[in-house]
Image (cartoon, rainbow, N blue to C red):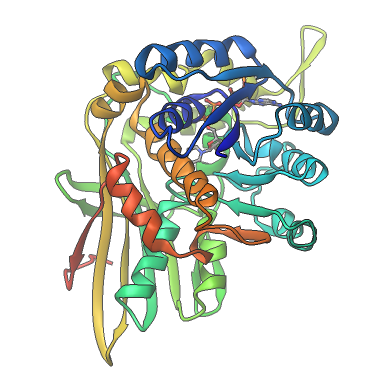
Length: 400
Ligand code: NDP
């Protein structure tokens, strides 16, 4: 009972390992596997020192299905928690099908040679998971993840019809570095430099990168310039809540961050194609990752808060209603608890809760699902208990 394999030993994998170890009544047997086993061992030692919980470790290349299947057949987990990179989603899903193991992740599949993410690749596994009687839970971090559950909770308890959805993601923290990304730099830079996109009146509207922006006021933080970007949960939310007329995603960026980003792009360091360097082929953005600060190490001096939530307008009992649901997370508290910063924390805690929902049979049905397709209530209850308490404001000015 409660046997899980966590794949990926980065910032998010660290938090997931801490959180599963903090819930021994649900997670009884835990293995952490990643490409570099020494990273798994370091996390396992820290977790053992803090909670006295034993974590098994292994090395695996999650792009090689046979290697994964071998590990899955040896360890026989009930669930894989995939917190490696989006490039590995499909090989891990293939291996889960072959070994008869359930699946959960926090980011949708992206091919390496194209900065493009969409759910179609993973939704295409629906029949195979259904036939195998296995559950795949997609996008169970904070955004996607908690923001999708917030929307499902709003639809269940606060609205007859959700019409306008704005997901607002503010990181008002300061890590003291001139430039660093809060999660994997390669994935992060690919995400924020692409063209903007939002849903309006039944179709996608594209914008130039960062073309649309405005100051939004975040609770306990104040106004921050917020930029419309495309984010993956919009795709599943407009499908699962067809009353939505407009869905947008906003993220705050500091001027210093945007200046660095512009320079990185202008000098070609954000390129994802191979270039010839000293007789070997390198991908500039992968080289950049090697010289940028490791997101998992930013925690020590990180001060301030993240604030992520959903601002929703719609109809309840024939009347217009506004609703704002959010979580504020302290980088310092996250570091104290798990040794990582708030962005890894806000992603890893929901991944653990999703795994808990599965193991307790609350989120378990054959097929491939986005998190908003499950009952939000038990997940919302756990957010309050596991370090990500949420607050709601009703009939307020949404600014949007
Ligand atoms: P990191 O880069 O810190 O960690 C990624 C880990 O995956 C590393 O341990 C890395 O190993 C491992 N890995 C990479 N390739 C392979 C492979 N082929 N086989 C096995 N292991 C591999 O990333 P983060 O922890 O910051 O992010 C993890 C995931 O969480 C990403 O998919 C990211 O997109 C997602 N995320 C989701 C968010 C959400 O809210 N939904 C928010 C933030 C992140 P090695 O150490 O050897 O490189």
